[in-house]
Image (cartoon, rainbow, N blue to C red; front, top):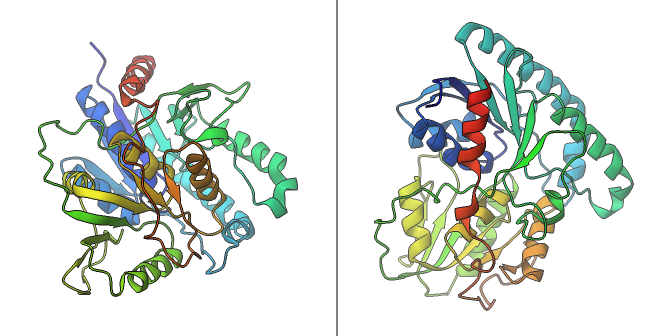
Length: 362
């Protein structure tokens, strides 16, 4: 019988990927009869509030970096490091104050760098132990890894949502483990892993499900390019815009349906009913697609080296197809119906084991 603890869960708010992979963590904490408080902002706040309306939510003020329209996204972030470091200090002060005033027993931070406390055990969740800079900044790799380690050392432990070794979904981003830092591989996390298996899947009546996500202005640039390439085509298309805060939905044509956002059950149905998914190469998206064994075309965000690496890595290992945002046609690729099935199973997830052990130690 586990003790009843109060756990603060805080995802990074750069897009909704970090929040979406917190969903299985929160579900497992609730299954273990733990009290959960969610600290988030913006789209992640709305995503998790819709998924868990019964929980207590706190607005955790954040800073959203500015991204370039060009391909130098990594450089754009690099120039904003002083601002990010100041935000990290603000985050840490906010968390320490919240812990003292709310009897928090433990913290789970998904890449929210300052969401740790000196008073309670804090876990940092990341699949990027090793951050890949662009080729022109390859000389900075050691410095970036040093800074990454310094941040993670503020936490009691680092949990990696991946397998260790050759079966790693994140490849060289998540392996090898850090030395001298408590690093645990908990297995991939998907919000669809624990969905009720009785959810019925209709006959596949969607030719393309296009899942937009990520930072602006690149999200809008991809949406506009997709709509332009769909002109004159008659396939059945659903475009999930990745805008949980938006209200208005444009009308395009009878064969193209636009949705601003979808909750988990609805998204599960959409993916299940689609012949092919077109999506960004975000790691959370990849984990969801592999969990559902869905063939997909990955289009990495330009200049985001993590996504560029993951898209190429999975194209080379045969799991997914890859296109660049600059390509003329996204819809002429051939898709492997068995994509996402080889050598991977979510039955090996060690999340429950690690959560139970961690809760017992609090």
